[in-house]
Length: 429
Ligand SMILES: [Zn+2]
Image (tube, rainbow, N blue to C red; front, top):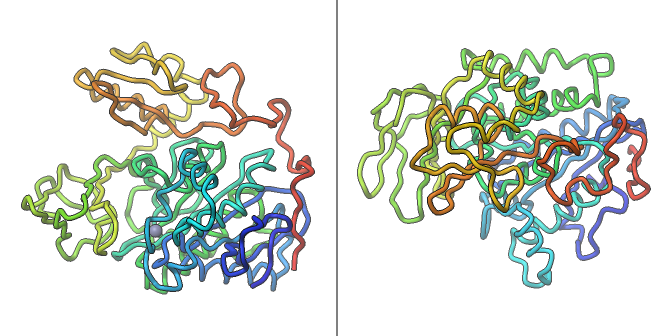
């Protein structure tokens, strides 16, 4: 495929490094939806699904609103059928590391630096030109078999898209992993949903990713049932995978595996397997690793590369989701310092800290209700933060993050038509 976005190439790129595998843009105003496949090279299903959906859009001449852009993440690792060559391409995305990469001469790039630089060459102009949130979907698959699910930073705009995909949504996983591409984009105010479709080599994973792409386009408002009568069939297909799983789960445990610790998952666990507290899940040099509570086992690692052993999650009730949405709509986070022991961070906006030894379970729950799911340790403090809640910051909301809203009109309704002059919509081909 040779479609490209006009004017978005970094001059150092060659065709072999081009991450754009196809675009569809009929010139109608609307959202920009960007999908990435094979960010991990050993996960081909997203890439294959992108090829299918782009071909279908062209053959059916779907009069899509806005534009759809398909990207390949780690082309070199995909060609070699490995997750990555030097480093995980889905772990180097934060302002500091992106800035450092761009400041280095490309001649010093390793394989993943080259791929990241190429993706930035396409993404940077889209981000710079965005007057409303772009919609990103990141297509992954798993080393083990199991039903598909969505991972998203816990913002309300992400929930709206994620909950429309007809597969379980897992909250808290995104915030546990630092440096993901989706996290970096959502922290700039955009919509981002990651989807784990199924086992890497299972052909059904391609069908799941196809359905996810159609439903993401629908959730973004780019297509509807009038122009795509096949949307209900994709919803039915995805619901068939979800079986009796909860619609929303919350991550409550992350078992990390430092290099050389001898971690080996015990055989036979599928993703979302129900386990009971005390069940033996894996072994490492220290001995048996057991389930810390009864719940759902997530992402058991049966491949040699990676430092995440497994995760565990519990179901979330609908009333909790409704309550958290209402609280966030009223900007209840402004009252968060009334919780016992919670104080604003002295240096970081929209970060709060609590003395670690004073943290109470209900305080953590309130932080989660308000979307503060990221936490890190600073000396004796636990520091809570969240994914950026909105693309257009409310000036009265003391959570603005410097630089993010530069050049964005803060008043009036978002319009798809007022793209800046720097944005050149590609032609449909
Ligand atoms: Zn992956």
